[in-house]
Length: 288
Image 1 (cartoon, rainbow, N blue to C red):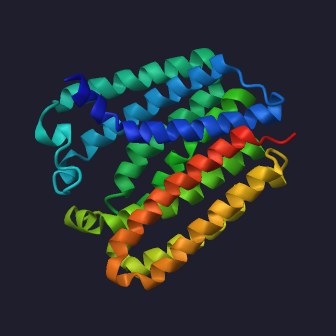
Image 2: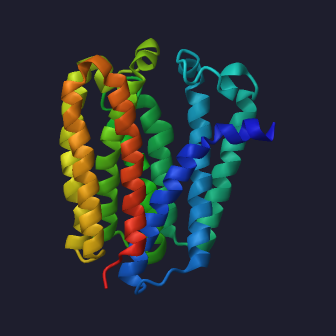
């Protein structure tokens, strides 16, 4: 039973957001703390935002339980199969967000709490509405997904400044090609559930064009930490090469029409490598 409830929190999403939160925390630590990491604050921030993200995922499972039953990859989720009641899921989700907010409020600052709750609201309410009605639901989702690194940043800085804006921009621009790659790879699922993602409504070629544009913009944004003096030149070099490699794979997508799903799967995994290494480089190469 514990494993079933744990699965409702989507552990993979929690882990991914923990990585970007850590990147944001490291960026602020290099800018405001001379590179010193306050590990107590770091642990509290990770725990707090992880509980908030977990709650949002449980709410998402509850809200999407009907359309999840229409898709092959989600039809075996606990709420779809009735392994957890809707009432219990709601109680569970509320408990998780209360714990997360309490931890953030006690150990970080009110700005971090406010930003975390804003991301929570955007994901649970706005994204849930828009994803069923418009191709722009993905953009709304990218806003909430860009919140954790900003929470990590302001937990240290207690300020929404240029560093926070850069982090937010990086994550928004990264998520769009990441999401579109998933949508192409899972095209049949989204079509079966009548979810109007871009590849379903406008075609795979149009989605590939958007991926190309967003990755190009991502590369520019991803280099800004060095331009603004937050990271060193090793970060600039490594992240620049990662971005260009990802862009090269995106370009190859225009000659893979016979095997779009394999290409999209490669794009998806490449996106995970890019964002993980970007966050690692923030840690290992802060500005001196």
